[in-house]
Image (cartoon, rainbow, N blue to C red; front, side, top):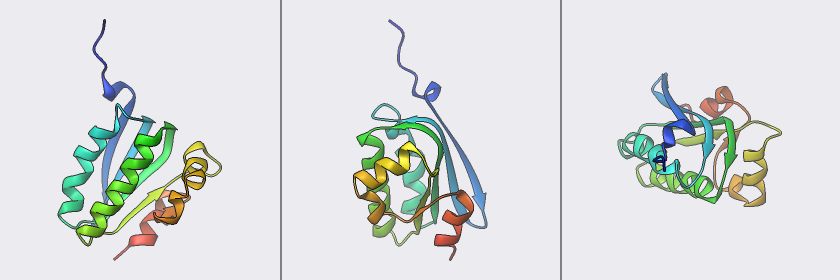
Amino acid sequence: MDEFDPTKHLKTQREDVDGIAVFHLIGDCDMHTTPYVRLEVSPVLTMGQPVVIDLTQVAFMDSAGYGMLVGLAKMASDNNALFSVAVKSPGIVLTGLRVLQVDHVLHVAMNVEDAIKLIRP
């Protein structure tokens, strides 16, 4: 049996835009891949740097992905860091955020540019 490789299922790319760390996620955000996203994003939030998570290219997200977003938002709040997410509308991630009512807890925008504007210091 082959070992599971999360990097085949979710790619993350970091881009810095005017002091804001933008993490572009591409693929599936689930219980197998979210720990790796947390490992990349957490150090940035603990330093108090603003973060945008770009979910516009996420094809699937399970409860672990939504839980990760809430956890990262809490981490941001605890460290006085600004945090927002970009989603595609209409899209499966936005639908999930609304069904779970997580869209009331997060700063949600329909594209990366607007997500940056939401938290621009």
